[in-house]
Image (cartoon, rainbow, N blue to C red; front, side):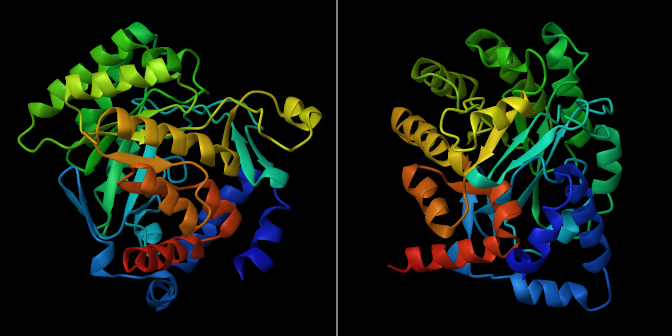
Length: 346
């Protein structure tokens, strides 16, 4: 029903308007009497063979919702009904910020891709905490944290530590995001020394807690092999718990959408099917170079069970979806889990 009815209607709307409309629709329908049980029976699929224990957490299944969809933790209980094994909120920043000027989200239907330059638009970490206090589901929640646009890189660590402190009692793991292409100079923090210092500070603050939470690093797909070697070294040296590979790409060389249309859109990170190959390459490289020393969460271009399996075979322990759900609909999660069960049973 999604691809034949709802998707064509949503694609008539501006992408960001469609996103907000979908949010309202989910919030309304999923909370109607009896609706939750219908949604769960339609989209749910629980099976002990899907369970995974990764960085000390037990996941009901390895399919998660990537950061960016529910930035402000407004739909955790509702998205949990769709059968996700985990949900990542954010990117959250200490202060609320509007993000970049509109329009800032674009569809490339010919490539089944998206371009976004959202710019960490969010209501601030404190507002998200208030919502997290009220959530009812037991789904694993990750907190993806970043810095405010106005914070200079030399003070960035303060923003990450502020978010860590605020979120710590209410999320199950953290993601340090230094790889968005849409916040000026943010990717400079991926350079070896700044990144090492940032992760050491976050890890140190986390280790002082009575119950430390796993710390992951989200990286860009545009890193060179040498930079990926640095990532392996830094992860092992700082002893953080894993890597999310990958964020959106600034590379547009593989797009089939006419170049004039892409250039007219302007700056932004590309996600979707065109990212699948590169994100898998990064996963495989990190896994092989590290000899599987740390878990990897694979994200980028997952539109089917076969795509998810490709990530797992490359070395990922878990996977996340976002753009694939926009193009394939909410049934994607169940379809991936069905495919994984068949794959595990071979």
